[in-house]
Image 1 (tube, rainbow, N blue to C red):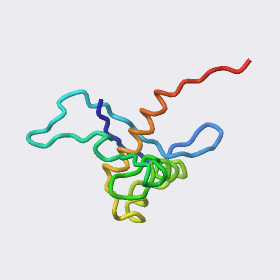
Image 2: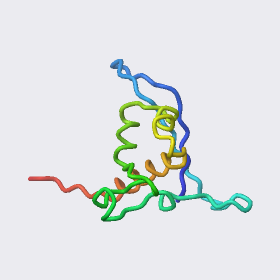
Image 3: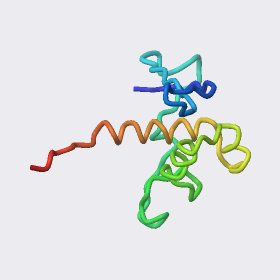
Image 4: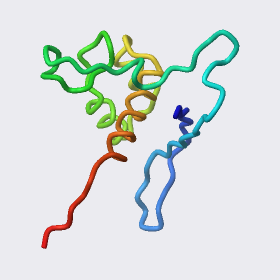
Amino acid sequence: MVFAIEESSFAETEQGLSFRQYRFLMITAPLTIGEKRILTWKDRISMDPNIMVGKPVIKGTRITVAHIVNLMAQRWSTEEILKNFPQLKKEDLEAALKYAAETLKQEKVYPLK
């Protein structure tokens, strides 16, 4: 499954809390556009025990997925992240969110009694 991310402006709740909205668009087919293959998070994220103790990172960097997701949670815009981390591309940020979403889908929660 492949996703695209569309960033929108800040939104506000009834309680007055504001947040940045991201819209996830699922792309079901085709996985190629012309001669170009659409990348998945697996093409941009790697895990190596010798790099950041095996945490998932953007390939070729020491920037963890957790760090990118944390920046987005702190309302950093895509442009701010790319400006502060010039080695990253927009596709890296999308891959980080895709990885996080897939990881959370696999999480199992057991109630404590």
